[in-house]
Length: 115
Image (tube, rainbow, N blue to C red; front, side):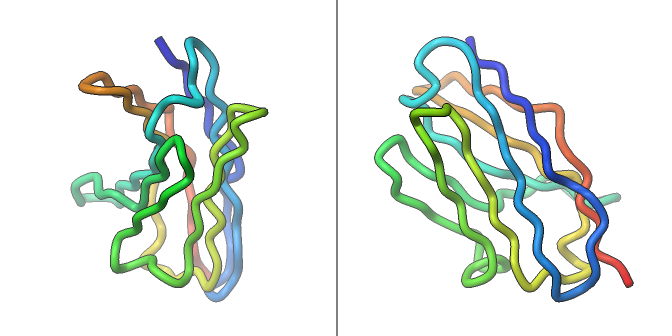
């Protein structure tokens, strides 16, 4: 069992930056593939990006070159650095952890990009 707690959301102007954090606790969280998803009002939840236990990353086309996922295994924390934010990035962002076929979700943190 892994518990995930996100933080760092908020209101930012277009073109601004935010960094989200996801603190993982429980059994061997450093072994998990971690990821970030987001869900905008009226839309389905979509993948933002993932990072493996070894640090390999993959991103949705919509955020490539603007968002960066990293992890600090010593602190069991995953980060999502978001730059050049756009209004269409507005959503609730969820942290996700998976090992094999078992997945866990955080509670979500709101990101609003607006002037």
